[in-house]
Image (tube, rainbow, N blue to C red; front, side, top):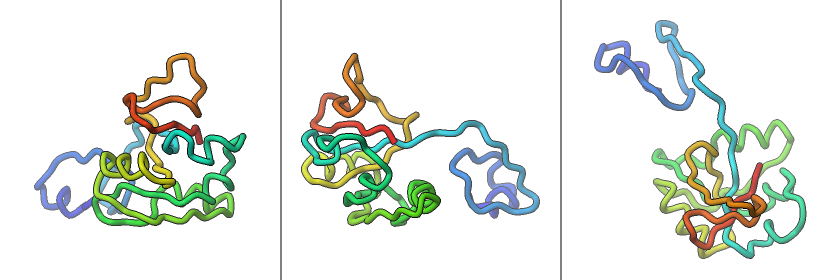
Length: 139
């Protein structure tokens, strides 16, 4: 959040992820989201039994960041569990990250409320994302 825009009256309201704040800026939590991992069908993470934070973090990752950041909330959560992941690729948006993941062994973290997943009656690990070649990993 760029509190300067609010402070200077250029905007009245900003809705987004928590970030840098200022004493004169009021913030309010609207909801909490969870993350899921997205991997190509046949990825070893989907085939190897229960997905644990350690197994998830052991995979290579692609992240979507308009600012080119290699770390974020997923890394904060993993750090609390004393686990680190390896981000190998940063792309500007989720469509790019999904394209990379669909043809590689990279995992994409994605907040759950913004995904469109057809789970039907299948288990989460075999769900597909928009009928593509991607699978869903609940985290």
